[in-house]
Figure 1 (cartoon, helix red, strand yellow):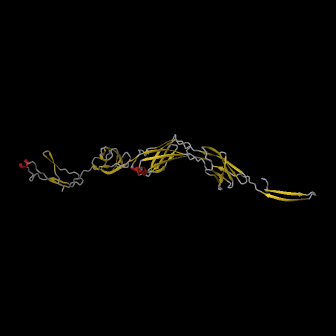
Figure 2 (cartoon, helix red, strand yellow; figure 1 turned 90 degrees about the horizontal axis):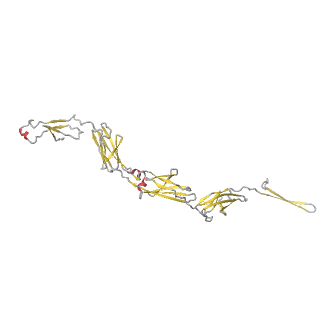
Figure 3 (cartoon, rainbow, N blue to C red; figure 1 turned 45 degrees about the horizontal axis):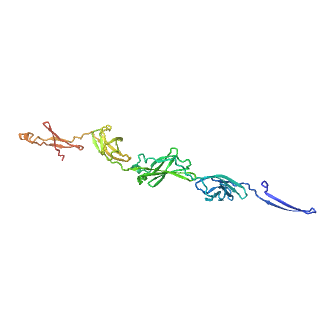
Length: 388
C-alpha cells in the first residue's frame, strides 16, 4: 500500500455458473499515504509552583497532545499556532523533586511523535549562609559636603561575596531618601556600585543608606540579605578672609581670619599655592619669607579654606609690593624765623615753651603718614601738620 505508485486499490468480483459462463464487476479505491510523525517538543521547567503549567511546540495544528508526568497521562491543548499547553493547576500538587516527563503527539493519520524532558519542583530558596554583603563608607569620609550634596551623582560602593551557586539572578537595591537605585554587581571583584543623587543623600531624613541583595533561583525561589550605613551631612563652608597688604617687604607675611580651627588654608599668590598655618584662634598666617622675592607689582591673592568634610570657602584680595618712596618733587618744606626776630631773648629763653612754625605743601599723594620732626639742642620734637 505504501509503495503503490497510483495509491489505488483495484477490486474485481467474478461470477461463474455451472455451465462455465462468467460475469464480473469492478471497483477501485484511491487513498493517501501519511507516514510522517508530528514533531513535538517539551520545554524543561524548574519551578516553585507545585501545580505548574507545561508547554512546548508542535508542528501539526490538529495533532492530539498527551503529557505523561510521574506515570499519569494528561491531555494538553494544541493551540494551533505551533505551541501546546498543559494548563496551570492541571497537575496535582507535586512535592519537591525532579519528575521525568514524556509528551506524545498523535496526528490524524495515527502517526506518533514524542519528546522527553524533566520538571523540577524546587521549593528551597538560595542559601545565604556564606554571603557577605555590606555598604562601604558614604564617600571617603562618611560625610556629605556641599559639593557632594549638589552633585548629579555620588557613587556608593560595597562588598558582595558568597553569591549562592544556584542563584540565577542577583539584584542589589539601594534606597536613599525613599528612592530605589539598582546597583551594578562585579562578581569577579566581589563588589557592587551605584550612582545616586547627591540631593537624595543630603535630604534623607534618617541619613541612612539601606541596601538589599536579592537572590532568585531558576525556580523562582528568593532569599535576601540587608545592610545599612549611616552618615552625616555638613554643607557649611568655612568663612575665610584675607587682609590686603601693601609693603616694601618682598617676601612678606600674609594673614587673615578663619572660623574653623581645623580647616586647611591655602594661599595662592601669583598662580602658586602656599600652605598657610591655621592658628586655631580664628586667624591664619602665611609666615614671613615663605613667598619668593617678589618684584614691585600688584598681585592678586586667593585664600582657600577646606574643612574636614571637604567644604570650601574662599576670599580674594591683593598684595602690593611697593619699592618706590613717595615723590617730593613738588614738596615745599621750610622753617619760619625762630620767634618774630629770629633772636631768643631772656624771656623766651626762660619760657616753658616757644612755638616754632614752618611751611609744608605738596605732600605726596601716596603718603599715608607725614611726620615733621624738629631737633633742638639734641632733642627731637614732633610737630603738628595742618594739611589744609
